[in-house]
Length: 249
Length: 249
Image 1 (cartoon, rainbow over the protein chains, first blue to last red):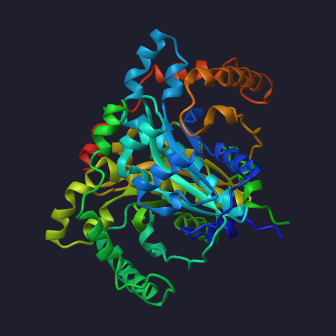
Image 2: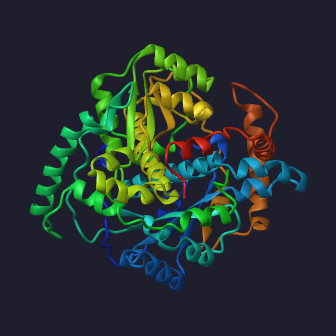
Image 3: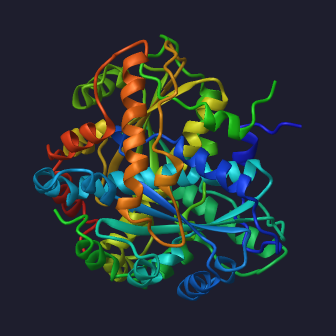
């Protein structure tokens, strides 16, 4: 039976425990080819996908992330923003003329969005193949070390990983913020008008944590967010980006 | 007949001419709900989607973008990165403690990726419904003006638009960089080894422009990229972000 794109998307949950079975070369090719089909700003395709099969690199990435499923999965992809490729195809003179643009925050946005659109295609394709996925922002715990491990040249930065594999768990669908808080009409909905929906969500998430089968806890979204943002993390990302000659001006 | 996620993804082309027919409320709800189901970093959901139905706002956005299909479509979504919501749910004291994190480039990456993952879900869902889509980075031609039109508070930034509608054209599938240039193994593939694939792509794209039915031209990818990046655009984005209190440190 064929499952539609919408049904695949609507049944997404992140998988953090995979069976000990590798993806086939054909599965990997399908996933990457689908990723490449995503929209891209001005046809720049400002990203590179690195597949990690070297067990030593995988182990070191798992250590950086603190997540065992970075190592234990069917395949590991690392999505990088890439403005190196377009720079290097120019002559010396042309490269000089391209500096200002390549260093801009605008092009940093382009590379980040391009990589994310491609990655979401990869994720949905993997799920369409019956596999599970988990995005790994945790690779940014030590961007410099990931950069060195993957030997990324200037203007290539590691954005996130994507672990893919055969699911060995069946987590519940995780609730999302109410539609009315996220989807606004013509102008931004003032926060006072969002608050009732957020309070409703706090209650919903509190109940979800109480009844879910694993990892029960007492918590609301508001409590989680305040706790998370009161503890600044990855403050080395900004200087790292400047060192890589992106997001500078 | 049900079309699978992979088939929907693989047949993507951007649509730049739509029939004069609006999306139904149900279609909009399906698209936004699917967008919300995307993965999100630490459950932050750091984005807001604004649906534009006000014809005067649409006209002004079309003027900023220089693209008629920003106005002439079935529905227009604007995807914004949003760290305002999580800031405002805290007490005064908590907000103070959250400043440093909210200002960081790390959280700027989070909001940009969160918004893009959601948007790609929206795009695929729309295509799964038989609609066409076009991403609109062109809204960043004047971020300040878009910001003012949509009355975005601090820490909310317009990232891109998504035009959706009933296709009134059938463009060819646009070629992508060869798989081998984009997908690397364990470490970044040195540019010298990518160049043969890029040259192959230059020829492929040159041929594509010659044989496609509309907008024939003589061009290669390399020529396009050098031309594009030699002409810095949107250099006001970086100071705009700082003014909005994101991507500052």
